Structures are given as C-alpha cells and as structure tokens.
Image (cartoon, rainbow, N blue to C red; front, side):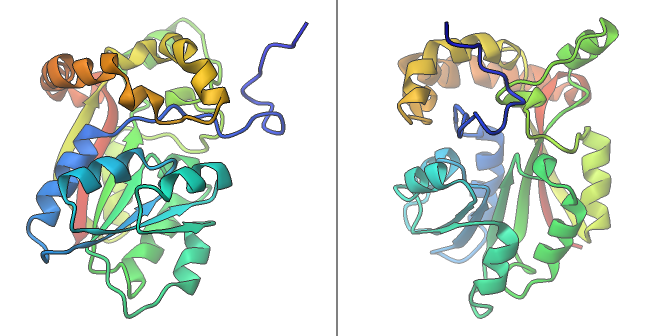
Length: 261
C-alpha cells in the first residue's frame, strides 16, 4: 500500500502548487503600470509556473516580463509567459542583472512568508539600482483570517501543500504587520486590496479534484478550468466586496502597492 503523502516530508515532495491568478494583485499592478511608460518592464519574483505572469501579459501585451523562480520545474513552465526567466534566488538575480535596466514594477506574490529575512530582501530591492524606483506589489496570506482563528481556538494546526498552512512558510503576517514591514523597508503603501477567503477555505478539498493534473506537471490547470472561470466571473467579485468590509478577518491575502517613501 502506498504511504499517504506527508506535507513536511520535503525530500519526497516535488513542486506542489495548484496556481491561479491573484486578481487583487493584478488589479493594482495594471493600474500602476498604466501610469508608467508604454512598454513597462516588470520583475516577477517567485514567478512560480507563471499564473500571474500569463494573466498580466494578457492584459498588457506590450510589457517586458522577467521572472525569477528557484524551482526548475516551475521555471520551465513560466518561460511560456515570461520574456526571460532566471532560475535561482532573487539574491543571485540581483547580483547578475544589468544595473542599467530599470524595472517599473516588482511583483512579490506570496513570497515574503517563505523567507527567513523578508525585511532584508525588501531593503535590497529598495536599494538596488534596477529596482529602487519601481513600485512593489506585495501579497501575503493573512494569518488572522477567520478560519485560522476558529482552528486555533479549537486547538487545531496541521501543515498542508499550499495555502495558509503551506509546509514551507517561515513567516506569518496580518494586515498590520505587513504594513509595518513595508514601512521599515522604506516604502509607502499607496493602495491596498484583499483576496476573498470564503471559497479559499475549501482549497484542500478542491485540490483533490486536480491531483492527477498536478502529478502530470500541469500546475495551471485550476485557472484554465471552466468552474474557476465561472467563479472568477460571478462569485469572486461579490466575495471580494464582502471581504473588503473587514479584511483583517475575512481576507485570505492582504495585497499592497508600495512605492518609494
């Protein structure tokens, strides 16, 4: 009998994310890029398999998109959406990138929670010649979301393959702690958004329907599904409005546009 997969068995696990575009992050990115040059230069840090990159390119075809992704499997898929993909860490990318190239926007979609020292990375990006004048669009999971409060009250916690309890998360944020982090990195938060949590709370169950696709290496299958498109068109906008009433409690992700202070 095949043993049940265990999220904290990192040696046995491969790239395990079921990706979909972050609508709140993309909304802020598109709005900011509309104020920049006609063919903007975008750096997608932790690009994954390219779900955000692909959607951003659909909305702004003329942009030049550079992805940074340490996972080889994900980087290979992201190349279909990005003009360039650097396979490795963002620190190594900044060491090797052309300092004469100036990015208009840096995407950090669910990246900071995976780092030992997220403040150091933000400060490095804020000081590097290629990114210091760029706007940052940052998304992190909201640790104070309602279903985590319920689980904590009930004494329940277990790691999972992705989401709030992602097995590789090292740091946890609330709206307030994210705002403080960005401020200490020398950034001013110019706009905020959030992603809804109601459907997201059932993500572990939803994931089971796509296990065969994930095993085959199709990490973008969720975003391509008819059900997800219908959700994005009809349910997600309503859910987002509800969650925006009390993001500290109802948001799954807190999303900020941060500009040089």
